[in-house]
Length: 585
Image (tube, rainbow, N blue to C red):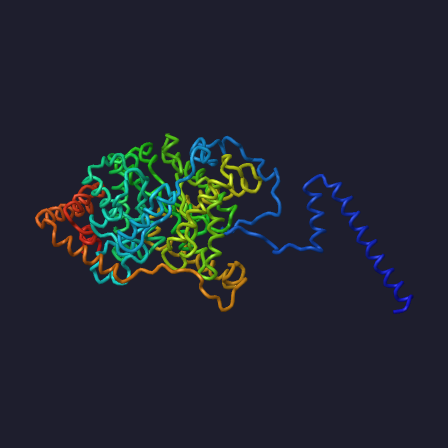
């Protein structure tokens, strides 16, 4: 290379350096003169000519457009006392208790239910030994649907997605050597299993007024979010859904009188979210359903200021971190507003006491260890959003029921956040964030408006019967799947960062066939050993009460169902009596 050519290259480099230096100085001068948002925005527009953003527009999972920057002007219309308030003070945005997690941590309540009652008892004891502070029992599909294990319809399902429990002896085996009255016990099922639990307690000499816990008795959830659980209801004619909702109100009425420490219903948005709802429709549908229970309870003469204190909610936590936090905050504001409109004056009857279970559909079968990170993200958002109780899914749940190791890691996720992170050492730490407060406002408005729209269309019973809710969820679920398939919604390990020829490196929790044999043998033995006269009288009384309820919704079936289990009736026999073939067909 000649000297002349070297000089030309050197000159070009110098010009480039000088040009960059000049641009840099211009940028510094411009930055030093930015005084307003408009000044900053002009600078950003120039910057983006060379360094564009990743997308033209950004949206939350529920479709709210996200601005590039949030500033004081975005929250200038917020009145602190009216729109946010203090913890335990209406509208409860910042939390339902005065000290929140500074007083005590949320209840760490992992779902447990696998195989036989004895298997579940062993897992419960393991979780208690590992520091779990609440019990959370999930039952298998036959138990949910009121099917005994020796019924042909139960074949292949016994103990597969929860514990099989069809008689009082099963319930006793689940809680063997566990002082259940010491714990808050969540029963993920409906009235038939709750009554079995109450029957066990009464026969044990336990004062049921001291029992603590909740039951996921929300029949709207079973229909809207878990169709298979309510197929016996939805195949029937008009009136069946209303009848099933009235049965839920039986629990509210019974617990209001006899079990004041028990939450008689968990109004569920979580499974509705899994069925296709977004953050807005999850809460709106749950609240519309909740209002149906409130209205029916009030129609029986129950005081909203009393039973309102014992309503609880179960929500989902998905991937959109800030939207989920804002969703929980917004939910408390909206429910307060709705209950106030219904005539509640007791602030304790207007609270959203929430259990949160993180998303299952966010978990992937591919690269399953990534689910530990997803679970940590969801758990953190739920804590920052003010949850009172939490379940974190185990990393292997995309494959089946969790192994002991996976369940322990899920519990440790909560314990590490509680004991090591410090994120809950001040209450509602994200309050005052321009983004969080703007998002909370937008979500609250959208949720409230959707609830009102549903009420104007006839409410949850009618919209469930005519398919409006099912259509909404199907459309949303289809849109979600299309976003994944197009790559618009990135799922790590599924449509991006995929491992070719991936080998599964986790243990799968298998349910052996012996589980079914064990449960069939037990239920047949129970039928053989019970007093036939007492059993017959109890079943006839249950039939009489259920027939009366079909004519008069205010008739309460709880006591008759409890007594039937005491007399040795099985779950399938009780359920068949409650939903006799002639009912609504």
